[in-house]
Length: 490
Image (cartoon, rainbow, N blue to C red; front, side, top):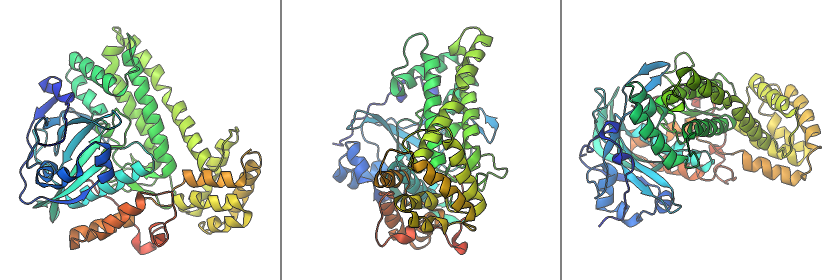
């Protein structure tokens, strides 16, 4: 008997919310990675997961009793253009469970075969994108950023055809839910107000139970705004670029979701783009906050029938609420950068101090992650600044900024040691650097060597701690190692 107590609330919504579909059987599933700490958090039995029945579930070859096995319906704006029907084209929701902390979590298979939403796709996933999502999502979790999680990766024993033939794989993804702005857009496009109300009530019960009473739908909108303002600020303080911020890739729960051509910046520049499909830079690093606001405006449009009976009044209510995104985002962003600079108190000129450092980094072609990390050495003693200034092509501008920073630190009540510890806790030494991710993927795909993948996961599990012998995982890429483009996982 399997040890999973499914409780599938989404599958209890009306049938138009999803399509019932079973995963496609694969030839020879092989479990290549199981996230033991996450499994324990979910209350799952490790021995069962590793055994024949567990591997059958993780590959889609055998569904336990109580599994829902559905593909959810959603629409979405993709690079600004609206598609009224997208949906899970290669992902199948197995069901929901309640973890050891009382939190409801989705269990989903990505790459489990075609669904009614596949749009002529094969519904499969190649090993490379599965490993990329596993690495980056687990790194984000270790960094303390809300995210979907990776429970397992399975090789299917089959190949998938992309530009070439590639080994097929399936990712088991865990999320607070898979409800997106695009889920609301699906029903709004059909004028299905009843479904919008059912969906909104479901989201409130599941994610935002404090939203009650007659004003609960406005409260829901405000809660999602707050969650996204906090999330995007965290992305910006860590140098993360999502790559495809379509409305169907924006979680109502405020988690980072759908890791396709995502990447972390090396050299700082706000126009940085890695996604091979983002030819015009719509989703560049610096565009992520306004794109988040744009996506939230599309969410607001779906909620208008729930906000007020009068259309003009509903628009006015939504616009007023949406206007609070920028102030909330800025508040979160500045608070995050203050921590990165070792500042516990607030002063008006802090905003200019942060802006000046970023501009100096941009002109000096300095590594985003290491500049902030090495400030910890500079915070401890003046001579420690050399490690930081060496990152700049011309360090003279950094020298001028450092004087301003030190003057600001003098007005902090904390000791130098306390400031140093604050900076270390706020600034990782290790991120999923693109060249390391690509090297791990290449080794696995080309040579069936999972060693670099396992090593990288181990390093990224403790991103804030120095790890003797792993110094190469912290350094920026050499010129010949630079990754200029990342690719979608379809």
